[in-house]
Image (cartoon, rainbow, N blue to C red):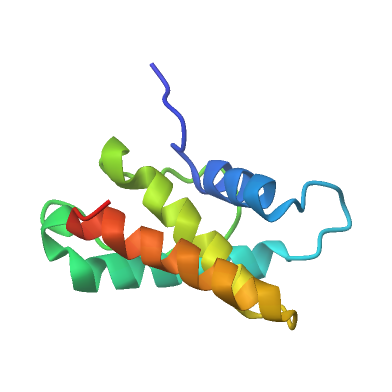
Length: 114
């Protein structure tokens, strides 16, 4: 049985939905979103090392069907990090607060505050 957010491509697709970036040519490139996912993994490893006890800490090199083995209850948190990180690069002042909200939600959900 497959579940939502099983692969790297699933994470990028969901992040694009929140970013309203679903029509090629994309505003945020695949490598940018992939980099954000890798940073999310490193940040999650710092905040919650217990989530990676039985896993090799992954590093993703392509937006493809590579599996991302993460407890289902924390998967959406990684989407929030990707979106927040992507919006940090935008120059509009309104994006800063939105980016901070997404990054804060990532942390809150990982440490059990949200």
